[in-house]
Image (cartoon, rainbow, N blue to C red; front, side):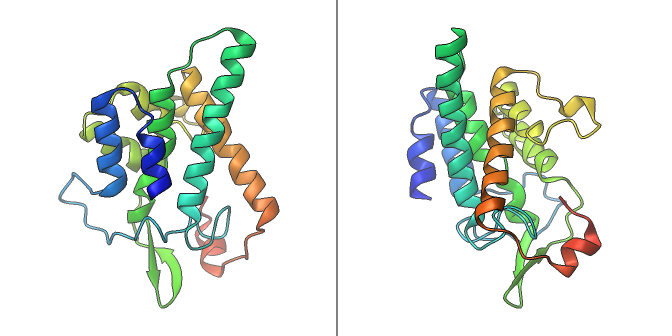
Length: 192
């Protein structure tokens, strides 16, 4: 968590920095009709049966995606002489998977699903929208999975494209380094 906060502290916009840190420290669901158990952000895997599918995997993935996205931003600014909003990249990358703490839970020493039917990108973007995050950050989070057939989820900004690509690269590299063990539940649910 300390490293996530250190990255969030690089956000220059004071309001965005404050909102991002608050969300990292205490993710919650604004819609009171939705009740799911909350997993410990420092322990939850990034997913079950895919990349970073080990305890603490979500934090490792989030740190890597954020750092990689910032490196990509530097490269594109130098190479193409374009301006990239680092505040949006940091906030979006740090929060892109934040609501997974309500989608995954530990049960009998195994990670499983809570029963939430929302996609994690949609759930995370909806929560950021409810908290008045900038549209650009909501878009980064909502589109980080790519379009998957839904044109509204297609990245429309350079910052959203950078976070999406950093997410894909990091997931692929972790899968090579730490091949996931197949899970019967994962195979039956056909999840991500």
